[in-house]
Image (tube, rainbow, N blue to C red; front, side, top):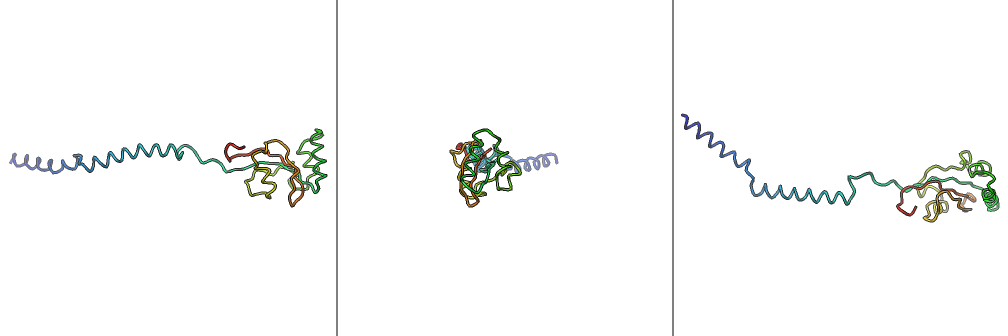
Length: 157
């Protein structure tokens, strides 16, 4: 009886052994998975998927003074150059835009939010942050524009 029990145990062990022994197909799939994991790491490194969020969209923060005539715009430019008051003070005093209550601040906006002529100045690569640009004529009148900040868009800011 003992020999019969040992025989049954040996038979069960032999029949289960193939489940744990590596076959040619198991070896092939595991080495492929290993090599794909290596290449996946390189792919992820170059696509930058795991290293941070995408860059912010292009935006600008700007202030302006809107006046009806070119003469008014040039007069205000003269006052700024003379150092009589701040840009915000002049916006509060002379601007015809509702933003005058905020010193001419328009907040932050993306390209296409403002009229074309305005956007072309604000988002132009040669427009420097902090400098007064203009007068810029639009359908609303003449603008003196100060770009306070730009984000996104790469190195050209």
